[in-house]
Image (cartoon, rainbow, N blue to C red; front, side):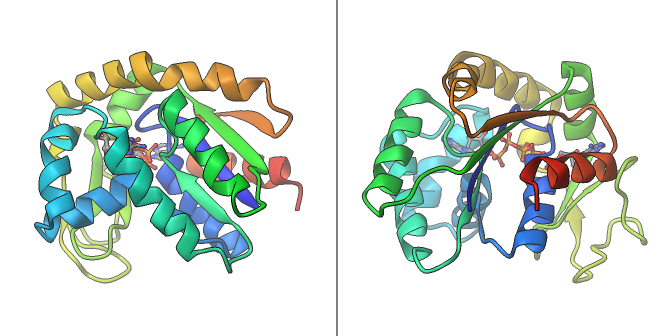
Length: 214
Ligand code: AP5
C-alpha cells in the first residue's frame, strides 16, 4: 500500500507515520528527516538545503524530487511506502504520480490531517527530538520517562531550530501558500480521506486503523 500523509506542520504526520509503519510494516520516506540527516552530516545536499529549512521555506523542487525519487526506487521491492511530507506543492504531486506510474504503482491512500492553528503552534513549540534516533516527543503530550533523554536509545533530546516561534510562523505561511492548494487537488481523488488531528495521539491511531480498513 502506498500512503501519502498530508497536513500542516505539527498536525502529527511524523507521529502517525511511525504508527502506520509499525502496523503495516511499511518504510517511511520523510524528506524532513532526510534533509536533517544530510545537514547533520554536512553533505553537499545538506549544505544546499540548510538555508531553506532554517528559514521555513520549501527546498527547491529540483533538489527534493530527485532525492525522493532515489528513495522510492530503492524501495521498489517493499510492499508499499509511507510518504511523510512529500508532495508539498502541485509540481511535486505531478512528479510523484510520474515516478510511481513508471513503476506501475499508484497512490492507494492520501490522508489529510487537520487541526486548529493554535494547537499546531502549541505542538511544535513543545516538540523535542532525539539527536541520535530521531524519535519525537512533546513536553506535555508525549513526554519521555526521563526528562531530556530518549526512551528508545537514551540519546539527548533537543528542540529543532525550525521549532522556534518566528520560524514556525514562516512554515505555516509557506504551508498556506504552497502546500494547502494540493489538498484541494487530492480531495477529488477516490483514495483521499481526512482525519481531524485535534484529538489525542491514541484516538487518532484508532481513526487511522478504521480508515485503512485492515
Ligand atoms: P518536516 O520535518 O517534514 O516538517 P513539517 O511538515 O513542518 O512537519 P513536522 O515534522 O513539523 O510535523 P508533523 O506533522 O510530522 O508533526 P509531529 O508528528 O512531529 O520538514 C522540515 C523542513 O524540510 C520544511 O520546512 C522544508 O524546509 C523541508 N522540506 C520537507 N519536505 C519538503 C518538501 N516536500 N519540499 C520542499 N521542502 C521540504 O508532531 C509534532 C509534535 O506534536 C510532536 O511533539 C508530537 O509528539 C506532538 N503530537 C503529535 N500528535 C499529537 C496529538 N494528537 N496530540 C498532542 N500532541 C501531538
